[in-house]
Image 1 (tube, rainbow, N blue to C red):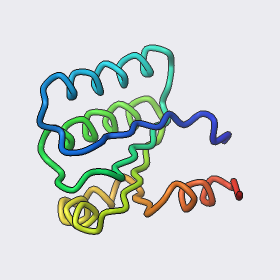
Image 2: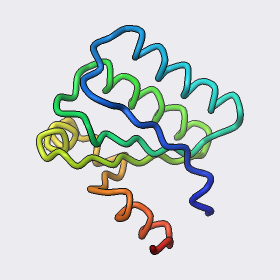
Image 3: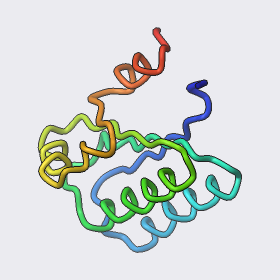
Image 4: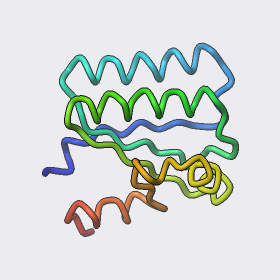
Length: 110
């Protein structure tokens, strides 16, 4: 599979602003309407994983699984990774430490 098929969703900071949540939701919805089924969530700047962010991730993974797509998460912050792993997210979404690590698994080397 070409790495170009993946759409990167960058979530910055702590998602507490309803306008931000709607903007991210709208972005994902537009990509889905265009036929995208492969997503990479980049949570590099997240220091606290709140329920809004978790909801966006869960909604997207449900869609991708239903449509035969795939989804991955890139997260640098160890405390965010721990929250994801404690919640069991790593059992159904592969989590990477960096974009380079993700790209290597897709057969892309830089």
